[in-house]
Every structure is written in C-alpha cells, then in structure tokens.
Length: 272
Image (cartoon, rainbow, N blue to C red; front, side, top):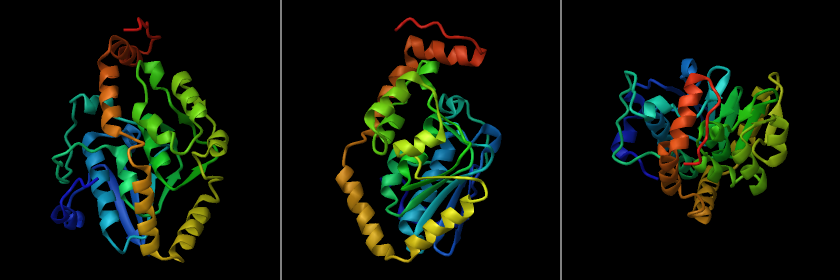
C-alpha cells in the first residue's frame, strides 16, 4: 500500500512529527507512539505519521528491523473517536496528508521488514493492529488487553480480521462478542503475544531477537515477507471492514453506546 510518493518519503527527516518519535541505530528503526496524555489514541494525523514512518522503513535499505514502542502506561487505546468525528485539536505536524485513506491494518503487510511490538502498557481496540501486524510481540506480564467495542455499541471489524491472522477463530469471535479483558498469559497461549516477560527482561529479549535477525540476509527476509504479503492476498479487506464500522457507528445502538460511554452509564440497546 503506497501512501506517499518517493519524493515525500525522501523528506522523512525534515518533517515535524507531533505524535510519534523515531530513531535508527545499528539497522534497528524504532517508532515510538508519543501521545501519552491521550493514551496514544490514534488521531488521523497520527496515523499519517505512522504510515510515513513505516513507508520510510520499507524503502530504506539500512532498516533491517522495525520496533514499535509507546510512551506511558497505555500502549494504545485505539481510535480517537472525537478526532475521527472531526473534532481536531491543533498540532504542528508537517507530514503531508495523503490523497488516499490510510488503512492502518494494511500497513504492516507492506513494510516487508521484521517487526517487533514492544508492549509495556495496556492495549485496547485499534491498538491491536500493532500486535496482530507485528511478527513478534514482546509484552510485559502485567499489561491488560481489552476488546470492549460491543459495550459501546460498536464492533471491532478490522481488528477482528487482523486478529484472525494470528489467533484461533473461535477465541477471536468470543473476545469480540463478549468484550472482556484478556490476560497476557492467554494472549500468549492463543498466539497474539510471542514473548511474555518481566520488566527486567524486556530489553534483553528484544535485543536478542534483533541480533538473531541481523545475522541473516536482509534481502532474503525482505523478499520472503513480500511473498507472505502476496500469499495472504485479500484475507483482510480493510476497505470493506472500514465501511462496516461506519455503518455500526451511525446505527442507533452505536450512537447510544458512545453517548452512554461519555455519560458513564449503562447503555439501553434497541437492536437498531
């Protein structure tokens, strides 16, 4: 999924980033979600910044591994619903707004580099795109994983598709329709987490994975991940799933669920 032109990506280091931080050291490119005050909720321009960083990682031959981290005690709380509804806070990001919509669930397949999620905070809703999309997920043993959309009158369509690529289908569906907190131990058992670690071990585990990867041919790995992307094909039709999400948000139950969440009360469902 090509979001930006080659010329735009070539200016990567010259842009101002309001929502993320990046660094490149010894072939490891680290992308850090840096919206701690908002629990790293995904703002539309934040998604553009992430897409720019990931396309840069894809095109830069000096990047052999991509690590995604986050500041604060919430790795990602999912979409910033106010922002996506058009209530946009001013920011100083200079990353260009692309001509096509960015479907974050598709970004990971197009990086064609090994990706590692460094999960030191809780994850909710759309935050699971990062976990399902990465090749490795190294998570602290105390973090919380919540898929709570149905309690807000919504449904995690795109997240469901992403999770189905790494977890057993019945476990995914159960999680989506009952909307509960999944322990990290269960997430590891079901395949969502690859390494459950204590805080004292996370640096060493991630460094070990990176070192193992860097021992091998970056070209062979890149071609292999491109082939994997091709094999997956249309298993995740994120454009369709995004359309279904919009229908759900605009339904009476969707409006009621979000209103009840804001008012901190139990929603009254009508099935409409």
